[in-house]
Length: 227
Ligand code: NI
Ligand code: MN
Image 1 (spheres, rainbow, N blue to C red):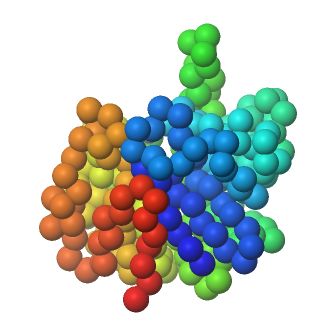
Image 2 (image 1 turned 90 degrees about the vertical axis):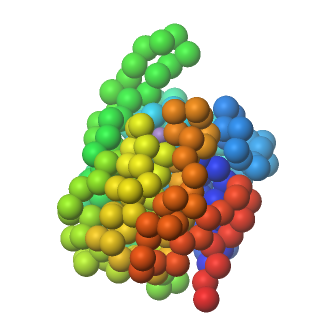
């Protein structure tokens, strides 16, 4: 399995011949190394409806015929755009041919803003547990700290955690480091920082506060290293 980070909350997983993109925000993401036209994923997983997470999903999925797996309200909305979708929701898991997906809670909002400045409600925001090849990846989405992260880590031992540290809209470095102590992943990768001025944060501050996990601060295009 290859797991790479692409700026903001964009994660790519390559497993058993399938490519999975999580929250593919490319246009408008000055930190990313990806180009929309180069993306040919088999699957797109979405945590919530905010534009910096749905990103270029419609264009990429139309070009690649990717299956889009998202919380129900968001999946329905994207289905209306002509995409091939699979709705799920918090607490539900499903074994797909590319791996197992389970949605967790996240404390945040979820809506999509159209070019006409309409705000479409897209249900509850979520985190995603993805398991394949015996490894579990937890992409926490956008969220505040919550104590049930401990339960999530106990029920699903996490190999790689992607956790937001940018503050303002999500946890900042201190709460994110505390979340790591609850989830107890083997590896943690900070995400959702330095994309925009309100979320400018030094990831070394986060790294210095984490005591037990292997903190891997990745630049866009870099891979998680399994030791
Ligand atoms: Ni958000
Ligand atoms: Mn966000």
